[in-house]
Amino acid sequence: MSVTDRCNLRCRYCMPEAEYVWLPKSSILSFEEIKRLVAAFAGLGARKVRLTGGEPLLRHDLPTLVGLLAGLDLRDLAMTTNGLLLARWARPLREAGLRRVTVSLDTLRPERMQAFTRSPRHAEVLDGIAGARAAGFERVKLNTVVIRGYNDDELADLIEFARAHAAEVRFIEYMDVGGATHWSREQVVSQREMLDVLGRCYGPIESLPTDDASAPAERFRLPDGTTFGIIASVTMPFCRGCDRSRLTADGTWFLCLYAGQGVDLREPLRAGASDAELAALIASVWRGRRDRGAEERLALERRGVLYPREALRADPHREMHTRGG
Image 1 (cartoon, rainbow, N blue to C red):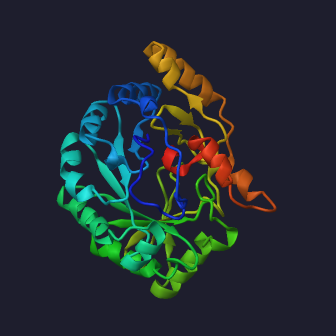
Image 2 (cartoon, one colour; image 1 turned 90 degrees about the horizontal axis):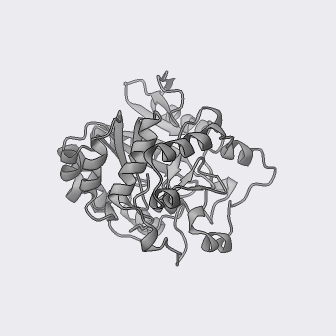
């Protein structure tokens, strides 16, 4: 569930351009509208909700929304953030009912963050991670998008940082999603390569069984018991087991991160559709789901960027920061 398309970083894998087209403010769902849609999904069996952006902490008074969603029949309520504002908001979010936090941490070197995100605020990200732990979040995860020539020499350093801060790092293959206008296949560091590098550092690495076949990350354990994950959605797509979908801040529902079109749930919501009518629409669309975006991309002989700049400006829903991946 994306709560805003705005972000206070300009990461190269998501928002590398100088200018963007934003969703109209009048189209952004209110907290009450978000709760109603999430309740409709929960009534159909969805039990995990993750709040995203853009950067979700840019949404004013986010703990109020968390409190509304925490009262629904959910098994998990989580948030992914870049961490810049987390030190300030971690405790209010925890007290409102947020259960888990994932922080994006692509490098441990401030000068690399400056070059990669156009921001000098690396220390604030680290403060946010510490603030989450201090607020009582026990299961802090760190997301690292691994890009050849940028941060692929920091894998072991990030493992050690996560270990020292009672967190778990998840390495993510650089994806060719909307917004990744600088993507190329040569920059992708595969799961196999990551495991080879870490194996040379630590010794034999064990693949861990999972009780959630639809989980995007495969988890591994080092000889000393330290665990980490890898999301290999570029070289080893998991489309056939995926049960996730994404709702943008303006109520457009995407069944796949690569989907060309979404379903407008805001229009029937604001037109007076009943809860039963909303649930029927969602169920009907989900039953017809055939998306295999990552598998289709893998099969391409010549694989380049998903959308050129002009196509992204023509429809901001194609942007990664709008879809809340």
